[in-house]
Image (cartoon, rainbow, N blue to C red):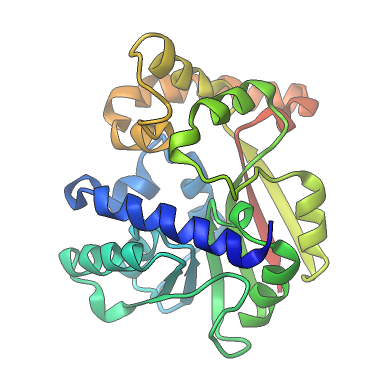
Length: 269
């Protein structure tokens, strides 16, 4: 897909989503600290202390990550292709009284309007699979300081059951996105010194089956990944049990890892 066409699709879709957002439903702490926020909890572990660090939230969306980082004392720049999402971010930052530590602006990942070596971290949750990584990869590497790190949460492409879910969830996805493959991650790694990855959520996806089969939640109208975090108090106990079993499974049978829903990747500049 031509880059301009992709940008138009993404901006239109996310502007429409921004109009539907209820700010009261966004909880930055829950997004990173809830037991069901497995990937973001790993991100925090990999980042370590972030007070005083300069972080670029790439594709900030709802703004929960940018606001959370600011709440921990980081200086955050948040960008998104959607002006509507930037407005949501600014309202959330004002609500949490961290506007002074956040700068929000419209920008695309293929052309970042920042000087080289500007950031200690570039963070993104579900953003790389919307981008042309052959263009955005060098940009991400450029804006990181020497020794800085890019940390991303991305969906994997290999599980056929998850692919069925993606088909059913067409109403909450764009036609311009595609889940990531290990080959894409390796291609992106050529712009960095090193990278590592850790897969996440395989057996815990049984809760998604519960949403679909028992609760009859339409995946094209309800964002399952958002529901499981927002309702962590309800699904947390089951998630803990499934996650423990999942970790054992992936240790004993490492070839099961590609079947996970997500992967957390870190690139060293």
